[in-house]
Image (cartoon, helix red, strand yellow):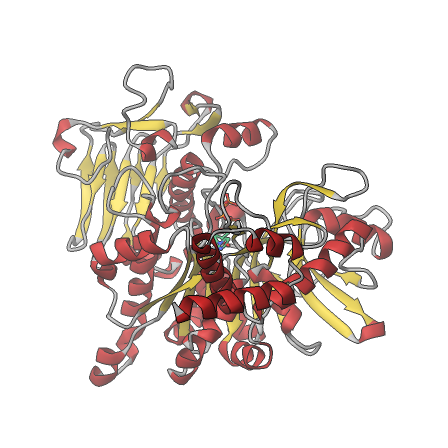
Length: 595
Ligand code: UTP
């Protein structure tokens, strides 16, 4: 009883500090039971939010006012082209950078931001639990990331003595949220942490923040209940959490030097990571963003250097595309976001994979607690900007970390072609098809799967493999997303983590027909004089594979028709792709998802 009274008193105190007078009125009229439950929620929200709810409301009022007045967040800043390197796959520089990156990989640690709700994808479970390809039901994104980290470890461990090898690991921290936490933990437990060491994985959970219903930052109350509606605060929370939970302090003690932030469904980027780490080391970048070329005006944030002499500030940062063009027009080029000689914008596209130097990171978090400046993005009903269409909240973004750095920090980018560095699974098939029709990247489950095959095929072609070309007849239509259906090559992380390593394992004259499937797995596996017109799956303990496989036993990717009988009964991971596999009986023992 005494405890409940204390909670209630604290709740009233917090609501008064927050100037939540409408809610206080409702609270006064509520039953004891309702009061208790709201009090618990308010006290917890106040505790979870760094700085407390009063600070949250104060900042919200300021930002909502700026939004109403149309204040430009970059007012006073002059943009210029940022410093960075365009890394061309298989170039001499690419190989040099990969070598530098791998000789520093022992000092790396990884952070996966996996707290996103995935509303646009509409998948009923967590995105990191999605299988990368229907060819292997066990290989979900999270497993693939763990396999990659283990593959990096097995390459760098050879430089350590026996005692060091036992202790050594490359750590991974996963940020979850209320929407993904339990399921992520359950997946890790069920799969025994995917073979990672006991202390190797840390999970930190981000909390939600109160949703706001008007410019006065009044909390949104769920209809029919005395409960505050809450919403995610954005992936920028990762910086506060790594500091709050002592994760980054622990990594600094372990003498780790680089922390690599990556996203829930961009598997491709791991092919670019060794060389991107090489860029960080060579350029001594405090922050290095992995970028992709973007067309002028393309709906993707661009990295720009912004200088404001009046306040002695200079930052290199992601600028959202709708803010970039007016900013450039005002003080860089009267035509705004124009093309360079290659036809791309001078300001590369941010893929939100970021490498940060641990020493800079820890110093900055010690000073700032990792509190990233927030923004607010209300959708207004009226011209006066007084009424919201739906509740809003303050948000913060991981890529805004450079805002916490001082002017002398060394921030730059490494730019890669998309085929080797960027393909996320974000959109449901209907929205993805609409994007496809507009010539935009669909970023959905089918393109996610095919982009892996495409990347691996291109890498193998670069090192001399002969892969049969596709043509217009090979175009398949997956509910409006049209993709050329060629050879499907999967290079498991254990097979090779650098292009040099892969090149050394593939010797002789090799040919793969466009209907073939080739799955290469295992550090000892190699290919010599292979002629493949069939399906060939190697396992972790395979050795040299070669010779003729001409029996034309193909696993076919068959477009789905949603009006077809039995469609509704199909597994969700098949439905979101828009294709299913037709599998010859002899492959029944593979881990294929086929219905
Ligand atoms: P996305 O932009 O894909 O957003 O997040 P989302 O929230 O996952 O999906 P939608 O917008 O609801 O459709 C980019 C990355 O940031 C993580 C996501 O898990 C993804 O890896 N994220 C996003 C967080 O960790 N926390 C958040 O609050 C939001």
